[in-house]
Image (cartoon, rainbow, N blue to C red; front, side, top):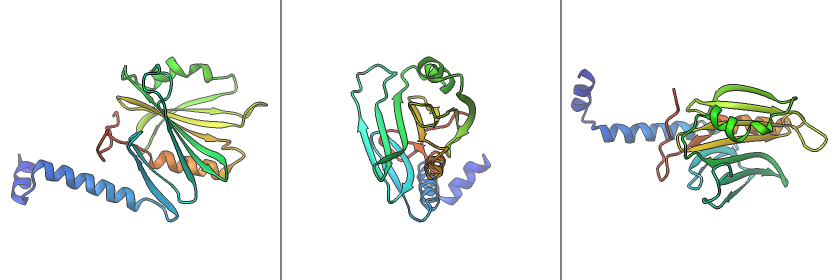
Length: 193
């Protein structure tokens, strides 16, 4: 009651408070972008993150009628023709938690040499599964961070984090700055507690 009275006295409506909070959040995010980086906000997929100005961002969207285990969007951060970080976005029509989605669609990626752990990622602190896959004769090492919102699943993958420290640094920065957005708005989706 006291809070409501304070808001009325201050002349703030709930809508103004939400707009002010969103603006403050956007300002804080912009201020957190390091020198030499730029803030990228996309509509499809509806995401926001920052990346170095010198990198190229390639975005591909795929047929939305494909089965849920097929990703809908692929983003590649490219430096000198080499992919440094990849982002994939899937639909999550069953609203699965990240661990359940991983078990259903990605458990086949785990090898005897894989390392799997759970953590929280992004500024919204989403629960996440992190898969570290060592290099093999056929492929470079990879670190993949996977998290879910109600409607989407996101993976951010670093290519060769062991042999390419700049790619690992970029990966860590993208994970730290990544924000799924509600479709058509600048407000981030809610993280699970």
